[in-house]
Length: 280
Ligand code: ATR
Image 1 (cartoon, rainbow, N blue to C red):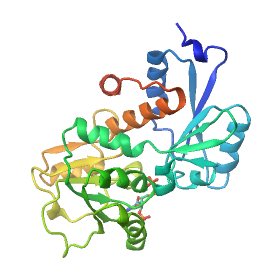
Image 2: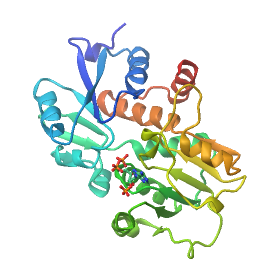
Image 3: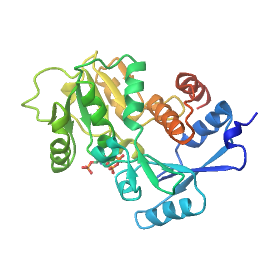
Image 4: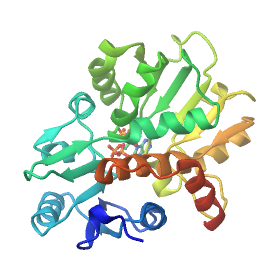
């Protein structure tokens, strides 16, 4: 039976990004829609830098209820929302938009809580974990605050060092965060997280090989299908890591928290991770 609060008309939710053909989000939301008994459709829209704002604005003007934003528009979306949560104001990065009853477009970010959910599920993270993050784009802005709140110590390694400096300067008031320098870090990393977009183009970002030990937990916020390892995880395994995971769990968790923002119902995250793993 349909949830009575939402039974009058079809609810339109969308995903905007580039690329998006690979995205599992439509499948995840199809499963959520059945589980929470709210009949919403979830369509993907491929955008370019020049048409992104127009497409998203048209979507909301034509009755759109809410949307997810993915690579590479998370930081741009900050300019679409006219109200933002505290965390979005800190990170300037948005992955969820919702139209409110008084027609405000509200910006949220569920990537950080999605990542923490999954690192906890995998038992990878503890308070004070020593973490290396690869990348300095929108995805990293989305996650570092939550890791700092967990009292983790973070080093950032990015192809363009100036971008990691800007990121570190922005977040250093929230905890221990530094630009990676191979002469400065003091002990083995507990976790190495790949948050670059390299996986989308099927290669691993470069990083010093001697950072990987058998107990280094390697986490890729992107994911791959057909039970294959992502290029980053495959590199980590070849370098000797015995504990690694892709970001499928984070993907499902951020989607579930998005669903909670739109409908005030949280789908069962563990059940949906297992369901998705059995399908793809
Ligand atoms: P996202 O929203 O996924 O973070 P983004 O903001 O475009 O997307 O950021 C992409 C990240 O992947 C950046 O850290 C980028 O490095 P630069 O800051 O040097 O551009 C990183 N990245 C993309 N292509 C890369 C490559 N070929 N090698 C290493 N890093 C790369």
